Length: 162
Image 1 (cartoon, rainbow, N blue to C red):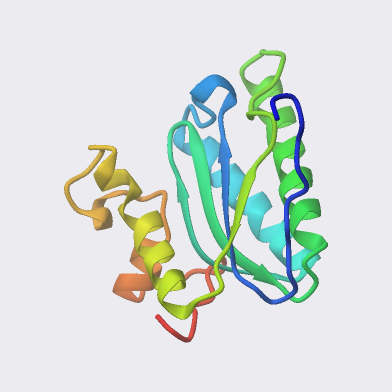
Image 2: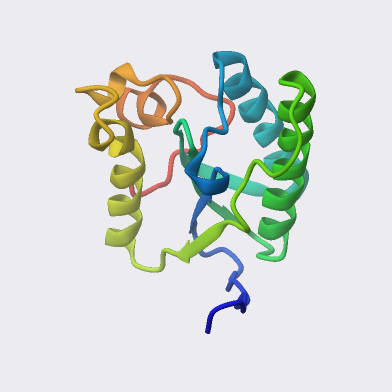
């Protein structure tokens, strides 16, 4: 059904894997400062919308988030508000116009415990699969160091299964 956007399903307290891609798979992070800005605003949005983040990866042209919310209606609000704020920052900083993100983000419900761990592993290993690093510990734009190496983070809440 080309041309139709189907409603994304969000369920209270069920983890979701969110993927937001750069428009036409173009970069959405151009400098380390862009990543710091995005993560700072992500932290603010998580707090405002009462969401819990378990894992993330900021790739050059897309973002992975594994999160949950007590009220599933807040997840779209978080992603849309964060995306808009970040686009304004990028367009102002780099004197550009137009879309930064693809049409809309993708969301997958993670209902089984084994799937949650597999999703966390998938997110953590994304830079390795992209041949950016040999070891996920060397890629600074993920939650791998927090989850696997117990480094502290104000963004990440370790999932009890991990």
